[in-house]
Length: 156
Image (cartoon, rainbow, N blue to C red; front, side):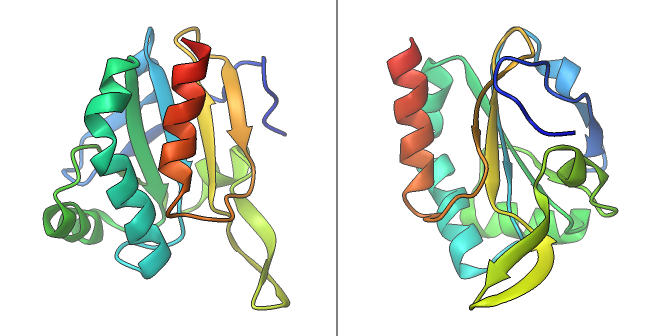
């Protein structure tokens, strides 16, 4: 199922770094920034996570929550959150089922070769549960959080 702007976002329930179940419906009435990334504590993923951390207060002013999703386990997420003082939940998708639903897992180009893996992408789900924006392939992880914040601000 392709992610389409204006359509309802696929429902999901994943566990966070503490083992607590987190569902999309828990955030009804808020803007949800659901970002998919390949691996905890790798250079690009760290820059992206820290960007969302640094913009955390401003994102909150836009009635937004950030949820990071990778296939890493809870222990890896706990270390990543602790090391970089991330104020938002990181969710584990070990079988990549949610990533697949959201188009964040599949064929991609890496260093000029076709490979299958996590596609760095972000979905902005509005307070009504519908997809407002889909960044299908994030090219620059470091600059991306600021672009998400800018999109939220311009929609306000």
